[in-house]
Structures are given as structure tokens and as C-alpha cells.
Length: 615
Ligand code: M6R
Image 1: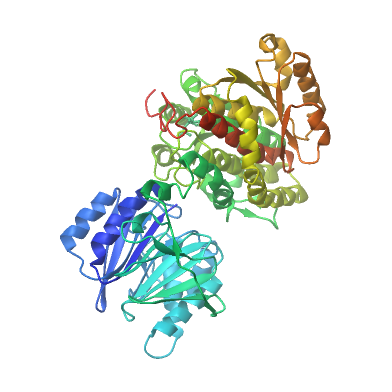
Image 2: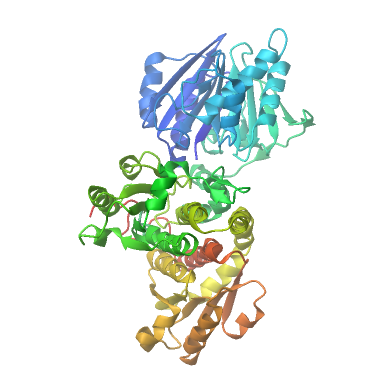
């Protein structure tokens, strides 16, 4: 999740842009840059690290001008370097752009542009700049506002993927072209000019009048006017809206807390996680970061997933997937135990470190130990450029964007997404049929829509959560693929509501925990339709016989679930291995609303830190 800010108007642009970047910092950043137009020249300054590094350099270079664009980058394509930081230029260095999103077909575009194009970065965004530059070259005569717009439109028609884009050109001064497809952009209407940004936060100090750009729209903005077009070059009439948010509300995009916002981010960031990483025709995934030859992949006899907390529960879903699809024995090892256990690891072991922050001390130490023992060591990490990402010999970013709430939500679902893709990639190499691979990929593509269906039931989940806020204890139970889901539900509830909870495989209750059950001890069963459904129903019957209140997650259409549970929350059906991606969203909302009912600080629960960098 990168941040864009642009300004065109009467005031000096540089301070507005730098201040705007500071306001966008919460979206995450690893580098930043700014470009300011002054007459027919464009000055560009970029810097790695904090916005303050860029601010210092911009102050030294002065950067006069009243039109400019700036960007905070959260790396996706290419490492964290000054060359990869935005703004990027085209071949002629006359056009400058900032871009959020992913150009999926950037390889094809690069090939089509040919070898005379020289690139200075590893980014898809720079290729997009070159593509627009190429269309400008094709337009006859002096570049005008209209031919500039048409060139951008032509280029965007060739792009597959997502973009939030602001482009300027030195030959068309005092003019910005803004385009959106899947990556939000807001245009602020000020008394002194226009402000453009990824969200409203950087413009609130100047204006509360905004225009929200929709997908497929292109706005052409001058100092005093703006016009909007669609990709068919038809004019679109836009309404100016008045926003009421203050700074903090704007960062949360109107949600009450970061956790709630991050729960709702999931359909979008899930798409970011899987985009461009599979091939439906071949029924397989392509996670290039694995950095292993087919021969090396065949040599893997065992997989070990190392993680802590929620990341370890995501890994448990991965274990089921690797074993079922690839037939490779897979273990999940809690990092703090692994590092001191003298684990059995050899060159036939593939070790994945799974971590949102990429800085968890125990996970890092465990991975170093695995590396010393000669395993293939790879990372599945959210924070780009983090220590785990740097120290592993490859791996995959989960693209969840910055996760600010201590309780992990969207990182969990994206970890599961990547583990499923890895399991499919190994599975197709070994024993998964093409048709099964295709089916799984189609099912993955349907997940965001199904997550949205669940998010639409938030009010019902809230009503149910209120009923359970006053119990002191709760069990979560599940079987098979739903056992890790129960673990994740339990950690979510305890960490943000402080209600004592534990998770068990459904079949385990009678071996001890059942002694605790009574009418004051609710049990949350995850009972979706899968191969262990009947077994799970029996476990729920056992719970009911002990008079414990029962809450259930059941598959849509399972009307008999109502006979077993005081409260039932229904979830859309998907392939069994993918069901955790949906069931967990219900549990996140349930825990969130229980915690809110109890007045907890859900984003910053007591005694916990977002990133555990100490042992
Ligand atoms: O940054 P990591 O994914 O390595 O963090 C691991 C755990 O500390 C983390 O998942 C923790 O359990 C969360 N607070 C759970 O919501």
C-alpha cells in the first residue's frame, strides 16, 4: 500500500507534498520521492527510508514550483532502493509519474517496447511511464493537453492490473493527469488549487471538499479546472462531496479502529496477494521467489513452517495443504521452541519462516538455525525489506499492506493465500491433476466476493457477539482444516477482549477439557461441511449434553445447524482447503465486537506489541 500526493495551484508545492507524505506515512513506506515542475523543467528528488530523509534533501535543493507529485513506496516489484522509488520517468525523461498498484502484464509491455528502452529501476511503474512516453511519441506535432490525455488513455487500455496514477509532462506545464483502476484516488478542491491523494488524510488541512475518482476514470487537472473522462474518452460528470472526517478518522478510512478497517481490507489485499502468481490454464501457481529448480523442488522430503502466534496458525492451514496436495510431510514449529530443540533438519528440508513483521526475534533465530543446518530457507513475509525478508534465500511477500492493529487479521488471510499457492505449486509438480489445480484457482478467485458476503453480515455477528461478551471463558473447537481456524479464533478473542479462551480439536474435549463445561462456559464450534462434518456434529452434541451454550459457524444451506447451536453464523461454501479464509473472517468480527462491547482498546491491547523483536 503506497501513498500518492499531488498538488497543482497557486502555492509552493514542495512543502505541501512533503507534509502530505508525512500524513500518508501510516500506509507504510520504505522510500519516498517528489517531483516539482517549474516552467519547462521538472526537478526530482528521491530517498530511501524515512520521509524525513527526503524532506532534508528537498529542503537543500529548494525545489521551486507550484505543481508537483510525490509518493511513499511500500515495495512490491524490486527492492528498496533510490532507483526503485517513485516518481519514475519515461525514456525521454520528460514525463514523470507516481503509481500505486501492480501492472500485471509489465513483462509483456517491456518486451513490446523493445530493447532500445533503458530502465533505471526494477519496477513495473517505470515500464508504465515508458509505455505512456511511447504513445506520446506517436502523437503528431507539439504535445497538447488533449494529445497528452489521449496518450495516457491509450497506454492504460493496454495495462492489465491496478493503478492509482498521477502523470505530468514538462511540455504541458500546469497540468496533471490522474487515473484510477483498483487503487483509490481522491481529488481535493481547494480555494488555491487541487490536491490529489490516495486518501483524504493529506488534504484535510486545506480542504474538506473532495471528488472520489472511480475505476476507469481519468481526471485532467489544471490550476483552476478539472475534467473527468472514462477510458472510452467520454466526459464524466463528477460531484463534489464534503467530508466530515478528522485526520485520525481519515487514516482509518472512516472505520472506528484500524482492526476493523484491516478486517474490511481483506477482499482487496487478498487479490493483491494472489494477483499474477498463478496460471489457470496450467492449473498451477508460480511463486518465482521460491528460487528453486524443479530438481531441487523434487528433492524436498519434508517441509517445516516456522512462525509464532497467528502466523503459526496460518502455517497450520499450510501444513494441511502441503500434505494433501503435495504429499510432503509438513510440520509447523513454534519458533521459540524450534530454536532450542536441536531440530532434525537437512538439505532435503524446506523451511519457510512465516511472519507479518519479518522481525520476530524467535522466528528469525530459528531460521538462522535452519540455515546453519543446510535447509532451503525461504520467507513468507509482509513487511518488505524486513530482516527475515533479507536473510532468507528467497520467498514471497504477502502484500497485505501495513497492518497497524496489534491483532493480526489481513496478514493471516494473505499468509494462508500464499501457503495455498505454494502447496499447489508443489502439488502440481507431484500429484495434483490439472483439473484440480484449475478448480482450486477458480475457487481462490471467488474468495474476495465471498469475504464481502461475510463482511455484509457484520451487524448480525455484532448482535451475537454482544450476547457472549459477559462470559469469562470460551472454548473454540474445530476438526481437520477447521482446527487451526479454532486456534486463530481463540487467540483473537483473548488478545483483544481479555476473555479466557482455549482451542481444541473437536475430538479432544472428552479427554479432559470437558470437565470445565457448564451453562456458564460457551463453546464456539466451527462446523462447516467437510469430510469431518459428521464427527464434528457429534462433538457438538457432546457439548450440548453438558449444557454449554453453543455458537456455530456453519455452511450456508445447513439448516440443521440451528438445531445444535443457540446462535449460528453462516459462511459461504468453498473448497475445503480454502474454507479457513472465510471462516476466520467471521471469527475476527466476532472477537472485534465482543471486545468493543467490553470497551477494550482493540488496536492496542494491553501487554502486547505489534512486533516482538525481543526473545
Ligand atoms: O510479525 P509476526 O507475524 O512474526 O508476529 C507473530 C505473532 O507475534 C503475531 O501473529 C501475534 O500472535 C498477533 N498479535 C496475533 O494477532
